[in-house]
Image (cartoon, rainbow, N blue to C red; front, side, top):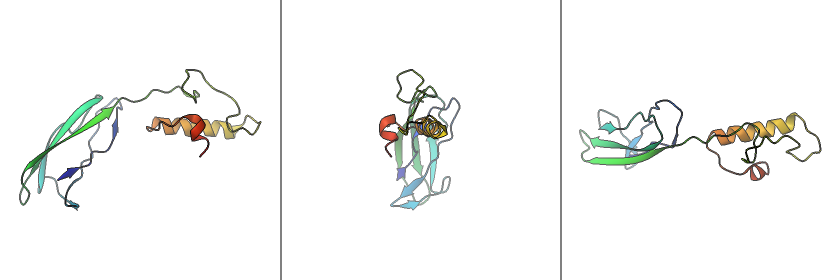
Length: 125
């Protein structure tokens, strides 16, 4: 059996774990083929475990560990994480305009969803 909880990032509230259990690539049905117990709605950052117990045609038990990661804090406009708000021509076209602001906002959205690439590398894409 396998479990894919996905990556979770601390959000300040309980999160429902998205559990997909398979056996040899075949999706199984909760409360028919297996039961779940353990930490299914984690609230705080930390390490957790879910126990899968087979039912019906499936038997045995498997414990799967996962983590809720601490959310990174970023200052809007601090494109290089130096604690300062960076304003300017971030795209190198010698004009400070909406295109620069759009690039900074795209990078902030990227960081807010778990991205970790440095700004200089990010804008090269």
